[in-house]
Amino acid sequence: MQYYLYIKSIHIIFVVCWMAGLFYMVRLFIYHTEAQQKPELERDILSKQFEVMESKLMNIITTPAMLLTAAAGVTMLCLNPYLLDQPWMIVKLCFVVGLIGYHLICQGKMKQMRRGVFTWTSTQLRLWNEVATLFLFAIVFLAVLKNAVDWMFGVLGLIVFAMILMSAVKIYKYCRMRNR
Image (cartoon, rainbow, N blue to C red):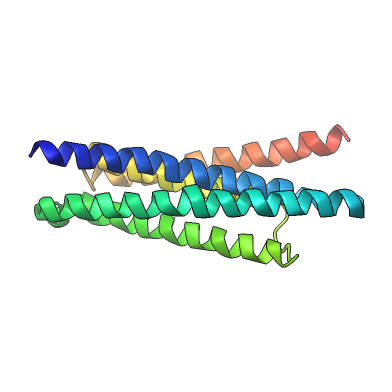
């Protein structure tokens, strides 16, 4: 069973890489969106640079990390199939599916921006960035506590945490507008 711990370690390492990629990806989207307000020459130069950065981050780091995270997770489930009988694991896997959906939406946003379509404001993107944080909190707490009943308290905590994050984004926006 020693190899199980190696697989678990690989899983954790690539979760960290995946999450770092997602957090940075949306930050790049924010900068890319804000660059659209610049004069044409500056906007063109910045957009081309952000497109390169976004593409490399998504294709070289974030997506491979997601795939390796999933592969290690599936391997652990195959080695310990009884985990699928645990309510906390089912809830955790639902959040993982949600995080994969978040990843795919980010890929779609990247492709939209490459075509010059910017449908979300930088404030909306800042809020979107916090969605990944909520997924991360939910998944980690479920994996560590291993109790779906405690999850009820966790949901309340997540709602409060989400409200704090959204308030922080709004305050940040207010401060930025005031300092202009």
